[in-house]
Image 1 (cartoon, rainbow, N blue to C red):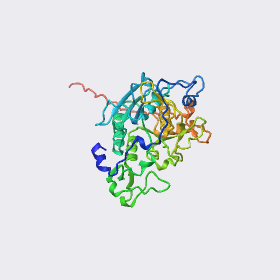
Image 2: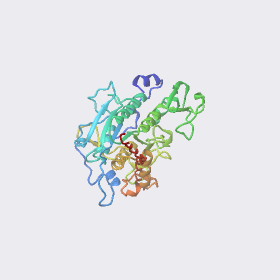
Image 3: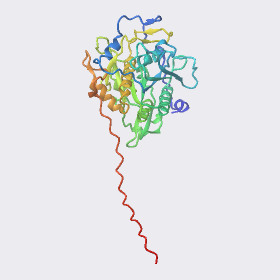
Length: 380
């Protein structure tokens, strides 16, 4: 969807405004990490036996669709990191919200990250004032798809779930085989309970045509292009299946746990969540300066960023894995949390990894019968 198409399709504008999010305490550290001892998210996720080869996510690219990244932060000094902005944005504004910088640091940060050799591309879909629309979010996903097609190696698409106050404003359309047939004016999400990913709605009229929101469809198209979609479950204390894109069946979704490993009370949960990762008091880089950090945030976006880092580590030596196979590795390698939920874990044991499918052998060439030599007759 182009920028112009998105604007035509959006009768209701989806505004992602920083002020709409819950107010966070002002606890920004501007003089570096002050924690004593190991950071709990790293300690929790790196408990492999001695002798396990260190994995750093080399060869994988993470495309982070969020608020951009402060690439000059010291956490990124040795990282392969790029900031990309949508047309019309001021490229001098690196990250107007801070969330993109925080998430990126948990992937590739030299002190707080878990996949330091992963390449990360920060795609800023928030304008210079920290606002965005559904169309711009979709433009960011489509840009990630285009960059993925031009890159080598496996790719991870990382983004967060939509807040409650915006989910009812998502635009819908009638789709047949992935092609938009009827725009949103004739297709409305009735919000059934439980909320399925796909559902037939009468205004779509014909069998086989589904009503689907544009954001979910954009994520699905990225997955069909071979990207491993990783999303947060959302911060509402509700069923993740009621939110986009955490309800998508073709991605890997992460909820948040506290340091006690109990589920964070405001984390979305339910059948659409695959695993739970640290999301409370997770120290990460911030956008206030090259030496600024935050450790007071409570967000499933932190859990999703750590999940993307583990996915990158999995893909480092198993680039052939599909999204379903990666999800299986994560679920099978998970450890129980205090809430009895599957906790994200680094899959240390090779038993968790499927064997690569052998390349089909070249068919044995059919033997060619030798052409009999032409007998030479004596001259008469």
